[in-house]
Amino acid sequence: MVETGPRKEVPTVNIRSVSCPNCGASVMIRSFGQAVNVVCGSCHAILDALDPNVQILQKFSAAMKFQPLSPLGSRGKLRGTLYEAVGFQRRQIDVDGEKYSWGEYVLFNPYKGFRYLTEYDGHWNDVAPLRTLPNTTIVTGPVTYLGQTYKHFQTAQASTIFVIGEFPWQVRVGEKVTVSDYVAPPRVLSSETASDKEVTWSLGEYLNGSDLWKAFSLPGHPPAPVGVYENQPSPLSGTAKAIWKTFWLLLLGAVVLYFANAGISKNKTVFTRAYVFDTNDPVGEHSFVTDTFEFTGTRAAPVKIESYANVDNDWIYLNYALVNEDTGQTYDFGREVSYYYDSEGSEGSRRDSAIIPSVPPGHYFLRIEPESDRKPGRISYTVTVTHDYPVGYWFWIAVALLFAPALLTTWRSMSFEHLRWQESDHAR
Image 1: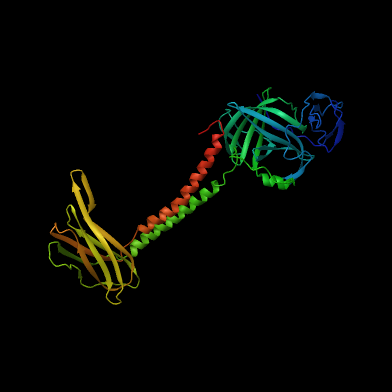
Image 2: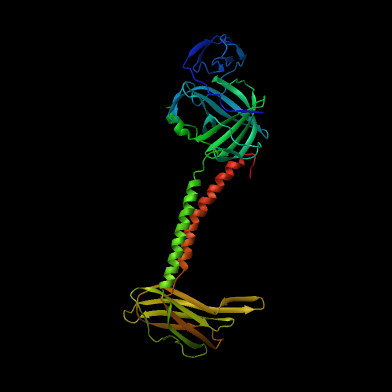
């Protein structure tokens, strides 16, 4: 097997017109001096462009079955160089009985030589022959080129089914080559192995159709790309990395704030008292107020009110009102403490707590009204008030809000890659 890169030749700027020996039509050779084959635009006979007598290499009298999206003769700039479209071929592979075809365009500049464009389902690639060979050992293994690793995507036998224009190699309708593609989006390395075992390599880079249309001043709009192409860059790959970087930075900030908040919080118990609720007490009103306690400091702070009751297979409901003795501001809420158990397990808890997130400093008392069934009799319970309690629930909300977009973007990026590799020899 012989591996070759492109043959670097000094271009000549010549244009000539010849008569097709098959049908007599005039055939323009734009890259004369470099073209090997030229195809008659009238009868599609393949002619030998190097023969002064222009011999017929293959007859192909048929209608124009495929119309190039970029007409031959159109000119446009790629990478700052003006190229002219001089040739077009349609190739096809057969995979599990399904036929897939794509277009390949030959571009020519008299000082830069040949370059190529490929198009499949609205996906374009700017392709150039390699000047140095990649490092590879097995067909389906990874390939290294200029320090970048390319993963094997697909190997298939491609046949030429239509040609028109000029070509720098001996092209034939029905010609078959073995094509292997290796991807590292947005680039693709391709090897073509001919029947004589000669291997040529090329490097393609994904190109947006809209950019190509603008470069070649083509009318209308390019065909919309269908699906995910083998070397199409993921629109989310950079976004996912950026989001995860932001996620870790913000998470670190949230952790610092969490511990800073815990460090400056006083977490001071300002009131605790035990009470007994007699459910058999005939007095209908069981509400009462506690002694006054003080919340010190200069800022509003969270207050935790904890309830503990010695209930067994029963419940007690405590109606609370935290009242500011100085202003009359009241915070009303209620909490249930219930605990049930049997041989199969338990349910509930004898302990419950509530947090009022922002309470100004001042003098306060609690108004408490207990409720329960009459059957328990006496229920002992304890009420504890903690001022400037370090609240941490905001931290977990922040983590969830930060994690959600990062996870969603990663999932979308993985879905994109899944669609890409579904079309390969390594579908997963």
